[in-house]
Image (cartoon, rainbow, N blue to C red; front, side, top):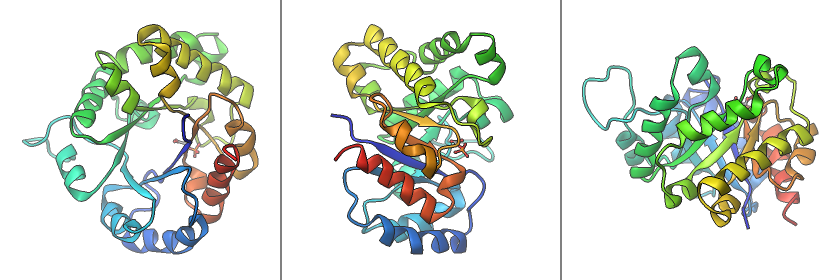
Amino acid sequence: MRSPIIAGNWKMNRGTPDEVKEMLKKFIPQVKGIDLVDIVICAPFTALQTLIEITKKTGIKAGAQNMYFEEKGAFTGEISPNFLKDFGVEYVILGHSERRDIFKESDELINKKLKKALYMDLKPIVCIGEHLNERESGKTKGVIEYQMNETFKDLNIEEMKKTVIAYEPIWAIGTGKTATPEQAEEIHVFIRDLLSQKYDKETADSVRIQYGGSIKPSNAKDLFNKENIDGGLVGGASLQADSLTQIIKAAENTIK
Ligand code: PGA
């Protein structure tokens, strides 16, 4: 009932039109015909125009990596959700751990952005996850529950259903250390239980929960085979067409 969603997060790594073209020239033919997996590329703002132009007639969707919660005004350096929408952007990553840790984004700020994104009809991919010291001291579920309560505060059922959650253990991001499928599944089940308590079972069953953190072609299949893992948010491995395609195919194979 939940279709898998694979989102590439290019971070600040591919941002010029030439870099976008080079990747997509290979990638588009490779994923042609895959229509049961939602494919999203979240690119830097400077790459979005080229990305949208080139992917127009394909099923690939464009996503941004951040946005502000106001539509207009004196917010030097920020990007309005209005600009993104007008541009043809469909998805937006919110609350990535790099935004939380490096740029000190709070749950409260992420909640404001999330409500605005939903209001603007942008599809949010919201990241949550624990640090290594939190996992090692047995606090993972407490951290996740807190983030779920604060980040998704005051979302109604319809809004929650439109939101994609990305569970990204921070210790697994860009480190090559992946959570085992069992470790990831345990937290995905926990997240779904929280949704079930806060909303209802039907809502919990319909929200897509991605895993993120060093997904590679070699570990994608085992992760996506878990019942509650509905695809992935992919950083490093999304920069190359071949590896991203293999990850998407692994997600497709869980459907057939
Ligand atoms: P990674 O990044 O796949 O390079 O670990 C994932 C992410 O930060 O979304």
